[in-house]
Image (cartoon, rainbow over all chains, first blue to last red; front, side):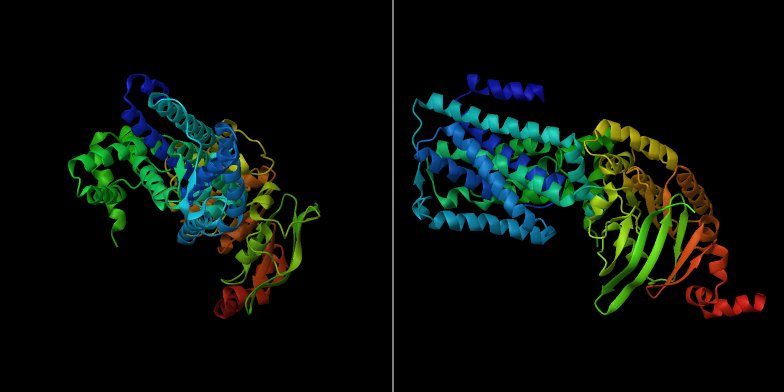
Length: 315
Length: 252
């Protein structure tokens, strides 16, 4: 883990700008995946809201920077605002479960997109321009890379901390059995809302970085539900509810998508789709879970594990 | 007679047109084992749900050491020192046995700010007590029914309750397993926990309880020492059926 962090810090000193940009994308998706993991992975509430808060943060940074505020200051305001909105929304929608909750969070993202499309302060459907960053491409590529890395490290550390403390245990208990969780003394409503807020502040922050880098925002760009879907797929690929899962998933998925795009330009989406189906079928709990299980039981049990995963679908 | 720790006054719970529990009074005294019996659908579990906040009674009040608790949520009631087990066991299936019990030790009564490491140690003690320590690293879903019942017990004990409500902990167990469960419940009482137990098996209720309350169609029809209650004609008819009542008549 430490080595990974060092590698990420040193990456810009020996890489071309396009590689750095690639890793910036990986970090962005990793942030969304980690955030989704709080509510979807640990707590078991399948949320499509990360895209909503990503867009919210992006617009907060755009509007405030246009008004002359400092970039980093807008990130703080954006994430705080995202957290507050999540708190207000979480209390009613976290009463829903399963599909109903998923659809409600879907609605949240759509609602914000409509709002950004129609308000004057967001520039409506025409979009909004941000002040351009000064300096050459070498400088600003690194500036945005390190900004994104900073957010990712923050999200990762918070997740690491949460999974090792009471809060994380409480969230997992809710996922496993909400009635039993309440009966062991867990204030389930409070814990779910905390998880939802945590899953919102980091996407909002990452949205701010994205906005400054893009220099121009359109509602359809940042309130794209694909951001949420990517976050979910990558967490599932890496390992739902694990600390490293979202990062491993984001890394593999981004490079896999790149490779497929290069190798099968016309059909790359189809191949990606097939791979997603295979993941859900054979390793529903993700790569990290498989690796853990293999460490415990030995490589020979790979076959039986995959088989037993598929057998869940027998009627 | 020792003090009342938990009291119900006129507890009534309706589901649509059905009155599941009807104006039930009860008193649970410190250190006793109170049996709650009655045929299927008598309202035993509903009464338990009203005490633990899973249902809120339409009328009446629940008093914990004089304080009204019937409007509190389940987690708040657990934190006040009332734990329960469920008739259908409610484990955290994909967590280990130790993690299951750790949850109780992390969040139960008087556990504000409890640390994970300390909760794990407390959880190990409870696993030792119920005889599951050698299964600590197994997943809860891998346990047999008897083991899962004991896990359920360890989990609720880990919340350090003063009052424990047991909902048919012996259902589905074989005679040998029941014997283990009975001595476990007695051990828990000796540890100073007051117990209310719902039970179907007469043998168990006779051996365990100091007093018994009988529910029938949501109403309390008898209360007293087990021997007395089980010879009450109304109880025999209601609980054991007319056929059994006639048989008892012939025998005596």
